[in-house]
Amino acid sequence: MTQHVAVVIGAGGMGQAIARRIGPAAHVLVADHSQEILDAVAGQLADEGYQVTAQGVDVSSREAVAALAERAASLGPVLSVVHTAGLSPVQAPVPAILAVDLLGPALVLEEFGEVVAPGGAGIVIASMAGRFHPDLPREQAQQLATTPADRLLALPICDAAAFADSGAAYAFAKYANQLRVQAASTTWGARGARINSISPGVIATPMGHAELASEHGAGMKMMIDASNAKRSGTPADIAAATEFLLGPAASFISGTDLLVDGGAVAAVTTRAF
Image (cartoon, rainbow, N blue to C red; front, side, top):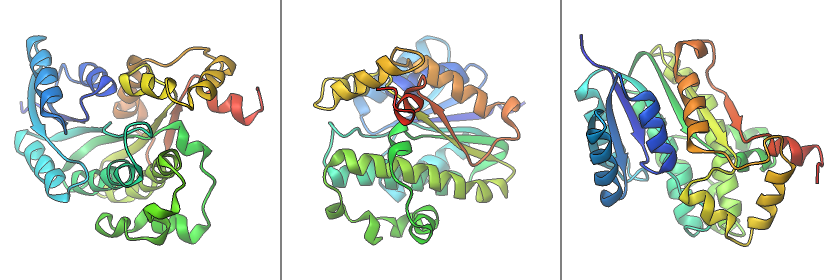
């Protein structure tokens, strides 16, 4: 019996937790921009008994993402695709945020939409920040959802000069992730596959810790304190949600976003503080 392939793009804290959660019965293809991180994570997974293949990828490059999708398909039927790679506002300027957090997921949705096997499923990791972005007029939202990835950054609404700072670009990109996943549900569905997004809240990863230590950290801590969970999330929380959405229990769920934030958005939107 051919072993199925599980692709995890982004080898950070969430990516590692997801690979461990969904990988025991799969051939795991793990990808990351950092060769150092990729080698360390792939080596550790292999030492733990996982069947793992590693490949470097720049998610803002069509050629690199296409090569990753081709490699995945060469290993066996691609039944799981999880895109976790991204930059946070404290890590990069606006153009890089748009390239990695907006264009990157769009390219992954397109390229892996060509190789995902029937019965497969995908997840794009978005962010609760996208839930705070105001809805765009219908025409602009449609453009953001369906414009081919190669022309996405040329849209006037995606002009880097239109964003006040990296935080604004990040929220916009994550809002766009949700729209593009919704639109991609139809194209993935034509292959008999599903696609959803997950919007994490504040998660205890290096990226999350950096955000908490930033100028926006006080507001984030207030959100955590006001939330139902009253704690930061863990990579395991996101891995559990991912496993559910990829699995048979979620076979009737596609084209939607699952908010996994401990109730932080609920606290904000109901004026808990």
